[in-house]
Length: 387
Image (cartoon, rainbow, N blue to C red):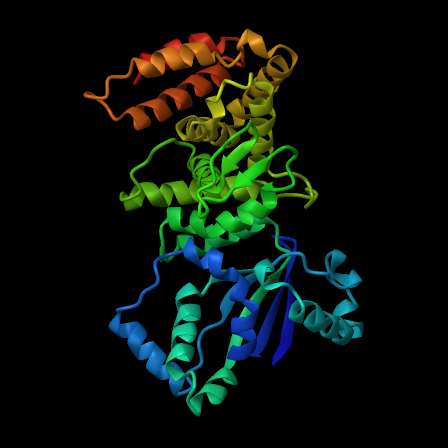
C-alpha cells in the first residue's frame, strides 16, 4: 500500500517534496536498494535497551516519525518541471498525485536513498526478522508508515538542507553527514567526462588517470566544505563554525535565479581535477595522493567563500589548467618541487600526512593570493617553510 497525501514545493531548494503513507511491506521493498547506502551511515545500534524497546513497541503497532527519502531518476509529471503555477494545486493536483503514485511505486530500489531514519529502518527490518514465519508477520507488514520523499533533489540542495536542519540539534557530526551524502555525491559527479569513480567497498585499485575512489572524493568534499585540510572535529565549537560556513557556501549556490542544471562549485572543482589529472604525464600520480586532493579542495573551498580571493582563485585555476593542457611537461603544478619537499618531511617530528595536507593547502592558497603570479614551485617552497 502506498499513497501520496500532500505535495509541496520548496522555493529555496527549487524542488518538490511529497508526504506519503505506506505499509512496512512497501517501505522495505522500496528501500531494499539502499543497503549499500546504509553501510556508510552511522553504526547500527543493536544492543541498545532503547532500540530493544522500540522493536517491542513496533510489534504493538506504534507509529514512527516520518522517514526521509530522496528519489532520483524519477519521471515527474510535466506540471512539476517548474515551480507551481497559481491554479495548479486546485485544478490539476488530483491528476498529478495519481501520476506521482505510479512513478514512485515503480522506481528502482537502487534509486532510493535513506536520508534520515537509518535506525528506524533497521528497527523495522530487525522486527520483521523476529516475527517472520509467525501469525504476526502479515499484521506487522501491513502496519502504517509515513515517509517524506524529495523528488529528484539535486545534490547541493540536499547537502544544504541536511546541514542546515542538523546544525541546531547536532545529532551527528559533519563527517557522518558527509558520509550519508556520499552515494548521492557519486551520482552527481558520475556524468563528468573521463571520471571513473571506484568503489571503496570493492577495494578497486586505481590503474589509470581519471580514476578516484568515492571515499577520497567524499573526504575532498568535506575538506572543501570546511575550507581547511585537517581539523579536530572533536572540538564542538570548531565543528559548529565549520557547519555554519558550509551552510553559507552551499546556500550561495542556491541563491537568485541560478539555473538548477548549472554545475555547482564542488562539481566544477572535481571536473578541474579530472581534466588536470588526464593532462599530466602518465607516470605522474600527483592527484592520486589523497592528501593532495584534500589540501587543494580545502584551499579552493576556503577561497569560494572569500569575496577577494574567489575571482583570483578562479583565474589561477584556469591558468594552471591551460598550462597543463597546452604544455604538461613544463610542470606548471611544480610536482617535482612538491615531491622533493614532501620527501624531506621528518616523520620523527611531525605526522607526514597532516604536514603534507597543510603544505598543499598553503601552497595553493599562496598561489591564489598572488593571483597566479607566483609559480607553484615558489609556492611549494613558501609552504614548506611554514609546516
